[in-house]
Length: 296
Ligand SMILES: [Mn+2]
Image 1 (tube, rainbow, N blue to C red):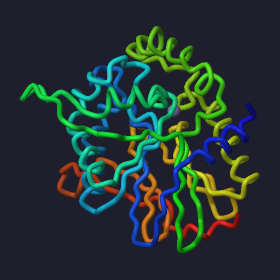
Image 2 (image 1 turned 180 degrees about the horizontal axis):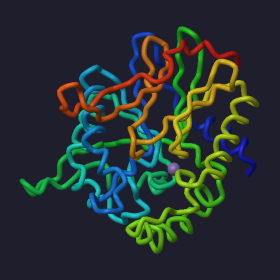
Image 3 (image 1 turned 180 degrees about the vertical axis):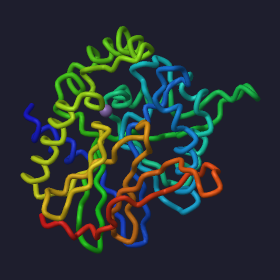
Image 4 (image 1 turned 120 degrees about the horizontal axis):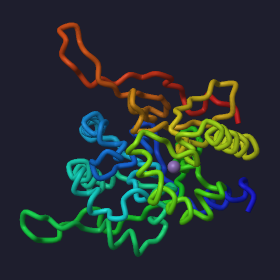
């Protein structure tokens, strides 16, 4: 199916979340949470992510995770990931119980397009201290896409991971998963990168950007993607295609905040203060801009 049709199909099936000027939304993507082993790209940023997410929890934000939250290609068993990053999941569970968590699937967690798989892995977890099952995300739906509808400006933002329409990531994904499991995970332990990954291959990332820009222009619609691990915040002259970036970058984690009907790109880093103490800091790197600032 041509890419524009594939994205339109996802948009048509997307749940609409109505927001207004009092809504606070944080978008992160591509955490690629693993098992805390050497191939776990998330592990090094876990303290920064946990701090950032706590900030958003306390500030009453809704957290939307835009896919590839967990690295289910390198890790067959979600339980290993859960055990490695239990504190992150417990915080996400608190968001969920306050109706402030939404999850999309990407290509590295495309298994979650199957509701039975979601139910059997995400509904509850085994608490090893008590030996009892405890609720994690009971009844959660993992979405292919979502629409944020800002009612005061009547602006819609289409949120999607962005692998859609990619042959290897979207259609024959079991092949991609096989290669990651059989080869790239092991090669990564020796410092080699997977050349089929949009995150690690500049040409593929460019192609994803081009597709999403094209979709935005053709449909006169704002779109937020991820998948490429490259943050993007368009100028007012460009098509309104944003990209959250990822949580696994070596320099900082990036995300998109929506607050007061405005959109901004933020980075969270570890930096030394004047006294030499390391601190986790939030920088607004682009925006904020009102959602209606872009012409459609
Ligand atoms: Mn991806």
